[in-house]
Length: 383
Image: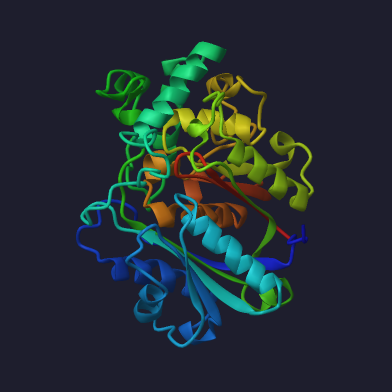
């Protein structure tokens, strides 16, 4: 595998407000995120040599960026890979810049889910029977019940994930939900798919985020506090892991496979000690607990204890989702992965105010795509 480490720099990031953006079109959100990133990097639309766009919506192509941002007549590529669409778009752009094909590139991820008729991931109907009737809450509820049974994880531990992420999101002006909640509220909320209640599930969200990247050797011409790409991992397992006989429902192999790729590239041997913060795919509270284990922050079965002991809080051993995560920021499918790049980059630049992780130097971003089949991990670090 080629070495991506330190060959690409992030020099600009932008993010539209996530939420129920009924008063914004897709183009409005792309403009808000895209021009913030361009301004942050100090570049004009004409300086962009190529662009990538991540979206689940097959009705959109590269023209959605070209028209909105006035960057026509350059290569623009659409990437779709379930919930990892945005981060995979970033990954592809990084490889193109690292190859020397382009000096400066733009990545935008977006989705409009609130008033578009689209609702989350489509069913994986490449099986004649098994996928019919499956919804995301159902699938992750099965994982939660299995984890409860196998490792003694509790609903209270799940609730602590929601409380933590709402606390962090309350400090994030770009987040969908900016409100504190308590554990009792989570535990007493209406059930969606037992044991997951309303506050165990991320919301359906509109949003867009963007990043400008360049060759590392020219990064200083854009800004002094640029951030380097240290590792990029992607793994695609079976179309749906739960189609496989013997699937344990106690984690998602795609996450671990992608993480190991990224760790190897970044030279990380002990993630808990060497990573300062992580943005992970907490589509449900149980998912964040599984992420702790799948990303090798703790041993299998110890994820519930990891949140309970405060290790993933801001100020803990390894703060997870200081932005509020999907749980509080929201999850506009294609926008989420790039929003994570935005958050990690700004954390490493020490630009996020009250939710700043102290002395942050290395950060991880992680998406879990679709029915748990796609894992994407990005590691960023300061020079």
